[in-house]
Length: 328
Image (cartoon, rainbow, N blue to C red; front, side, top):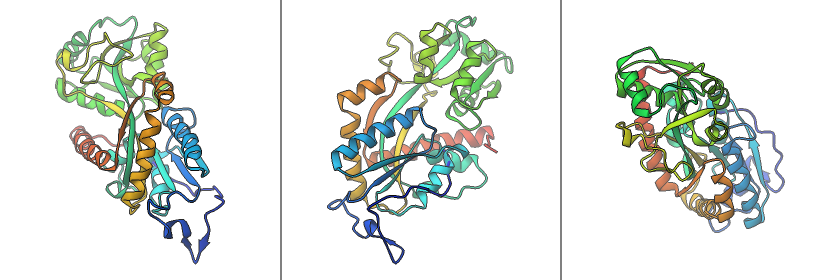
């Protein structure tokens, strides 16, 4: 959840008249889109959200005949990209692609934000990627139940890695501590890969990580997945127990990809874009590409996305406050 800089993209076809964006003046689903679209990604090139943005951008460009530019703006816990889009014209031509952070918990994590997450307009939540409980392949814990029981009875004896302070992995770890009633040692890293590498090396006891980042290490025999943090088994790990089946149903956790727009972007424009995104994300070719990194299509419309964001905000903000977590 993070954002910001000055956008340095010169976009042909968007004229300025008296400081007013003509595309904005012609807003509405009937004429949308009639100008280039900018997709701002809050992560660096190469990650799951970047891949989704580029797949969508390419297919939207072919579908609508308008240029689509993907611009990566990582940094500040997704706040850089979020602020950039937040301050853009509300015309449907500047769209944010981000994980939950900036929409759900950054208001609780950061002392100061330069945007109001509650005013950001949902377009679609296109997909999600399940999180899993991971240990190294030589771990003495062969089941999730063994790890959970040890954690309950031995406060402070285990360490868990995360992608960084305030990330999904960290918040899931904090929720795990609350559910077990026992604090453990949080070890933050600067991303999922270095965190998982230290788990694989046995330097950290466990981690709550997304299945996409975990799969290469799992396939290489370096880590073991003890449970999926999902209600139902997932296709890539059909025989792995769910966290509910091992006695901790409250520990559901995943990372989803949200497309959002600046405050005031018309609903009919967002609905038109959302419908196109859903069509793209469920194309067999797209489903096959995303399945390789563990991403599951979802295709929520603006109203459904708003409902999910509201529920997730309440849930994870409570975790942040109760655990006293800060990103600063």
